[in-house]
Image (cartoon, rainbow, N blue to C red):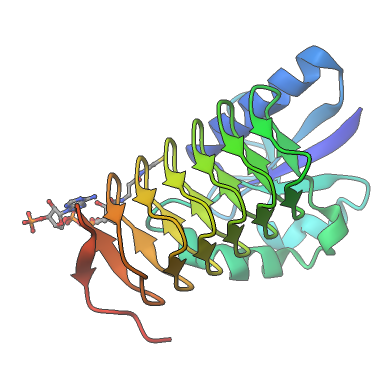
Length: 217
Ligand SMILES: CC(C)(COP(=O)(O)OP(=O)(O)OC[C@H]1O[C@@H](n2cnc3c(N)ncnc32)[C@H](O)[C@@H]1OP(=O)(O)O)[C@@H](O)C(=O)NCCC(=O)NCCS
């Protein structure tokens, strides 16, 4: 059994624990060593597992693998700095695929990725590092998702779509084929995207339109 430490005590941790349970039911593989979370007391518990320390303590656990679960529509922009704060090498992040997901052998997944049950990842898809794919989401052939991007449950990314780094695609959103979603953009739940989306934009509705001014870094 390999030790796995999860970053963040939020809702996505439920998904990752379910993935671990489903993998272990087929072949005992992962032992959850605990969580790192800056907002919780060390040695307190979350979902039956111990809080081992803060994110910056990650390097103390040299034998463990890690996976980030932080990434809501409010926190997703912090993912790069959070991963950086661990000081961990890329190779120390695990990639977990729920056995009930359909992942093409012609897809490429980075490290620190997780794919929930019912999701479908088609051929020639590239998922960058630390990408999260929610339950029942579909990523169409030849699409590329940049590092840190979060795909919500039941979102549909059609074929030949380019999604930049650090985007958030809300639950049940849909992206038309061959479009580009700029880095850091947020697509609201159930939005229907029919045009390219600018970096940092927040879009909602059908067809999707900007909700708030574009964020310039
Ligand atoms: C787009 C989003 C980030 C906006 O959140 P927010 O900044 O807190 O916005 P508010 O809830 O204050 O809503 C602002 C306005 O936008 C509207 N709105 C918000 N989200 C919307 C959406 N997805 N589609 C259409 N309209 C939306 C609200 O109705 C409100 O309109 P009003 O001013 O006319 O009343 C959020 O609603 C959203 O869609 N997040 C993704 C949720 C998701 O996918 N969760 C999956 C969890 S696994």
